[in-house]
Length: 458
Image 1 (cartoon, rainbow, N blue to C red):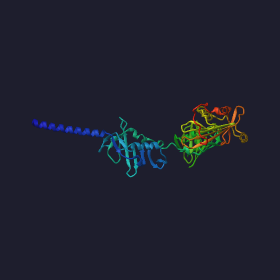
Image 2 (cartoon, rainbow, N blue to C red):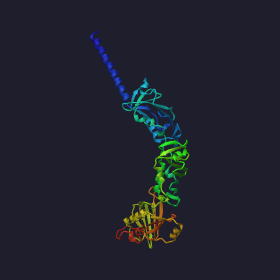
Image 3 (tube, helix red, strand yellow):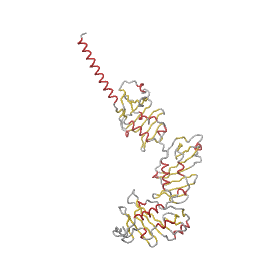
Image 4 (tube, rainbow, N blue to C red):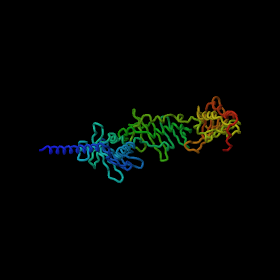
């Protein structure tokens, strides 16, 4: 063989090797680039079937959210199901491992660890198979059942697919909307209490009639709406209700809503606390602190504030004491002006705010509930009367009137009546000294250049 032939062969070999190298590098670059294994819209998925180490699970989209259909019928955990859709609709891969003709057992895809089926409107079901994890970066090998491409996907995408039945269930077993509850009654060791919501305020109905502490009721309703099971247990069995302390419940509560009443019983066995919701065949283990939300006798639920309002929301203020009367109104800029008395004076903002703060902070030392005593107080002429007109900042234009009548002191206490309530408050007599009895008690010192008063009747 001459030198020329040898050089030609060497050149051809070099060209061939270069071509192989370039093609291989291009192929490697293409496979290492991220891409999409499955392109599916999450909102089009109507059903999910999942097989993992814990068994077979089926989910169906309903009018009010996702429901678990297999292995039992129950509400599904919205966050977990939507997490699956977020991670697999669409399904992105970090790199492509192989296109076709791959030995699937090398990636655990001959016998997949996880099988996920997504049923979407208007297209065939898509099945995603997950094999073993890559020991180096914790990624998972994945492919579509109807394809041959093998891809590596981020390890976190399979986290929700590995959960068990409890994780897939909605733990909020006692779903109520606190804003929709119109009445509440419960029985505990402290007694039997009934409350009702009227015109935005909570009232005790039993064992006494009184305004209730709204924040205490709201805290209870919030806790009930957020109540979650830490385990689901069948009610049937040899232990029955007694095994969960439900033969003699710690607490029985009923929440009334426009859609009907919801009832729950709370029991305790050993250190564990259990709840049974009406219509359920399962007992739920819950946190031990929930029954404490219902604690306290009727007096603990009673509102002690004489007047619940925020000083900033007051738009009109009327004060009458003896022969003195003043009517004040707040303008759109937030400044106070007199409707009464005569022109030439303006309110002292500091004095007005101090009066409103004193009224907002006023609390009962005790109550007058006896009908005979109340009748006697009502026959007395009040020493002073204060009327407040407040505006709801959430609903401009919506106003509410609050009237308070202050009666002469008896010793260190004075009696205050809200005519809309069937009882009276006993308060410290110091409040009487904070009510204006003459113009100088609420007006700024006389001086030139003050703003003109608001016309009467505005």
